[in-house]
Image (cartoon, rainbow, N blue to C red):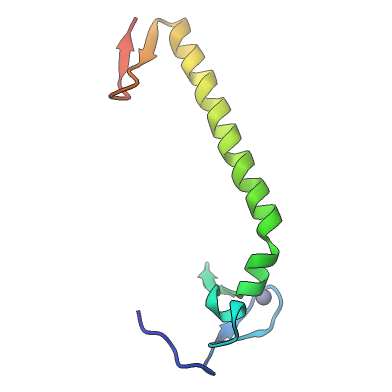
Amino acid sequence: MRVPEAGTTVGRCTFCRDYIIEGMGNRSKYATIRGGHWLCGDCIISLKDVVISAFFDYHKEADEKQKKMLTKLEKYGWSVDPETGKLQKL
Ligand SMILES: [Zn+2]
């Protein structure tokens, strides 16, 4: 990937509306594009509490869903082979 020279304006943050200029520290170091819109590193870092909370909730819900599915499988006489991950009749 080509890296722009320090001092080059790479875009404008959609959240804070500030310019992202290469070499601006965290603002440019962690800047990214999502759906065609720039997000600066400062805004991304400021979202960390919300993102971490959402990340853990997402995985907790996925684990609960998996447990519910496994319980249903057992009810109908099936289980998941822990080594292969394939369904097997009990
Ligand atoms: Zn920003």
